[in-house]
Length: 136
Image (tube, rainbow, N blue to C red):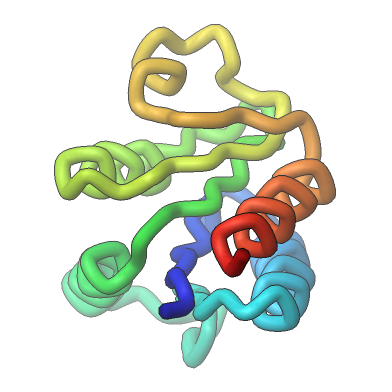
């Protein structure tokens, strides 16, 4: 059975282009590697402001996922919603894999994550290899 990956990361603290671009790349590669993907930007617009709808939809996506792939690459970004997604996923026993170079000194982040990669490319290579190994 294919595992489902929720693509977590800053949306408000980044440009909409950045938030969409890395998720589109990750989605394409993960789908090709036989994962299911939940992209919280899919079906949304940059101008969406209904906090209740946004948060509840994200929580439901995390509940449906087996793991989170988390973008944490931009220093100076608050990552408030991302941190909350990580904590919620951790409480549900989800695997949490992070990529990026921001917030590595955070004890809270290190405590709640299983693996941390420098780049999206490295994280995707790991996930693809993990899925190949699991299929054998």
